[in-house]
Amino acid sequence: MPPVTETETLQSRFREVKARIAAAAISAGRAADSVLLVAVSKYAGLDQIRELVVLGQRDFGENQIQQMLQRSAMIDEWIARQKAIAPYAVNPSASLAVTGKLEIGCVRWHMIGQLQRNKAKKAIEVCRLIHSIKDLRMAEDLHELSVVRDGTVEILIQVNASGEGTKSGCAMPAVPYLIEQIETMSSVRVRGLMTMAPHSERPEDARPTFARLREVFEDVRRDGVAGPHFNILSMGMSHDFEVAISEGSNLVRVGSSIFGDRPAGGAADDDTDAHTSAEGESADTHYGGETLADPRADLTDLAGGTFSPIIDGLPDPR
Image 1 (cartoon, rainbow, N blue to C red):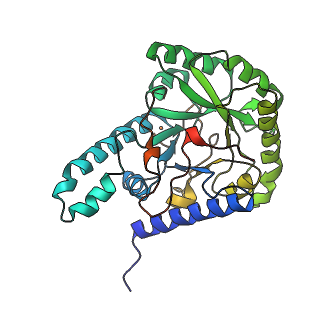
Image 2 (cartoon, rainbow, N blue to C red; image 1 turned 45 degrees about the horizontal axis):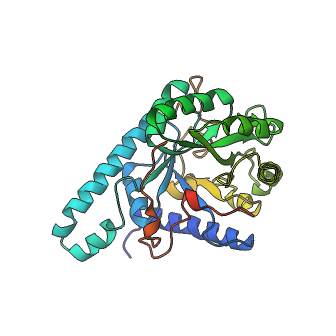
């Protein structure tokens, strides 16, 4: 029997995660494709990212602006090159079947780390969704920058739903008031809430944190604090995403379960807070307002399944 290659291992891990997400959604009484998967790629190699793109993954999370900018440009260049050489491949029909589903800008990049104010301008050039806004000051900066670009930046409010002193985020009682103020900004759109549960060997320990955030999310929607675009509840990482989905999450961030164990000494690869240095960005690795091409025209991925719903089409989490 031939040895298992890294590519085969990556494919199997990716498909297993997708299957677990679908099963958790069905168990929660929701559609199998109702949860968006963001593959946390900050420890991944570029070849691994390209392989997932071929398999149909479109959403990737990074926690440093510089790495995100570099990878965005490299992936777009790779897509352009593949489309150019496809007609001349040994098997042109197979190559065209792959490249026909790829377009420049089809990969959506998510900023999952703490955003430095002096990196905000670069962030909105490439970010599809910024997951870590926790105060009015950063939202105001993003608004001013987006007005100049004549665009809109979409964000999630990071909430400290566990109450841990080591976790950053908006305090839960302040969430509606922060959203009210941001909603007055024409160039910033609050798409939802994000939290991280305390790390534990038992995924069930995360349930109270996820339940608390879901209650705040539902309160904001019920009270009309945010508009109809407020529809993303981001909870769950590699070790607890199934519990998060059962509590209403419709966006999960998964890193090590797809790409394998993180480097020795690295913190959890899908943890926003664990890598934040004093300057506000990850100390371990290098991570828009503009409208991106909508890939919904073809929802069939290259592995024979379907894409997770795109950010603009996420349904109510419960």
